[in-house]
Image 1 (cartoon, rainbow, N blue to C red):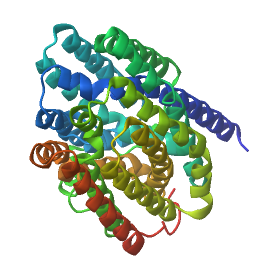
Image 2: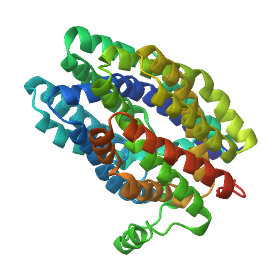
Image 3: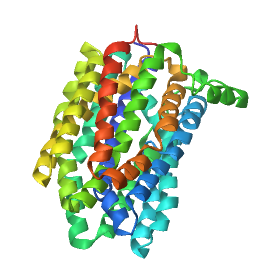
Image 4: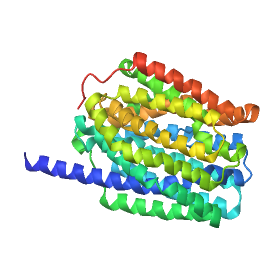
Length: 407
């Protein structure tokens, strides 16, 4: 092994450790704040459709996030990974501060710029996934994604319940301020420790016409990826209508407290943390598609449970099962797309995939809020269930393993 290879391997190992620690810190903040986010929004006087609209604007699959994904992926392949990871943390810190301001003033209107800032942070999502992929060999990427996901899950074992307890005892603002402090710590870590993984010699030129061509291709994915694109887009739309706004639905329909919601999140994080490394390794050994199908099947069981359950205890138990759905999905999803594209186009393709499903699914949380107004709790959950069943059928019938890793 040459000295250059030794240096590259050492840098890759260091980056994987840094990304794992980032996932842990991100999980502390996100799990704590996410557990109280929807009841917090409703406490400011927002309606369920408005809550859904906020998720549609700047949530994980919101329209602002969607717009950032292809831009972030394209730029990351040409200007490197680290700068966008750090920039995203700046956006998250600004968003967390605006959310705290909304809690201080008791004005939901501050949430609008806050969710836009949070959506802008999605510019780093392709870069982070590419950094993780580039920190491992093609045959070990399931394990690498499993490692970072495990530490995100570990942080969620206690953080959501702690966030719910703090909110009940001291108010939502306390939780939001803790979130600001955690994001500041994450920003410092990334700025100082993270190293670039994409050498300048492997970066295509920054040509505007190439970006325009890429945008034109967003709704026309490569033939070998189309079945996967279709399946994950239907998945995003279905879960956007139901699972994305679940905590708000439970707060409105069954008067669940922030502590109940925090315990639900903690339950899912326990099973996720315990099982994630195992499933990541199994993805490397047995392939991605079986675990994508398994994840969606577990989700179908959980959704049926949501339709039948009423008590906090039942929903906490179901959320424990939900953690297995996440643990089987994440490494399989990320390894599948990583191994289907070359290194030079990895971040761009991840951004295109995110943009494709985001453009077609971003209205889902708002529609879920409208379904709640029309049919109550069961309306959005039943719509989610139908979509999940369709995804299982598409994955089973049409999605195949990568022929070989492309690097």
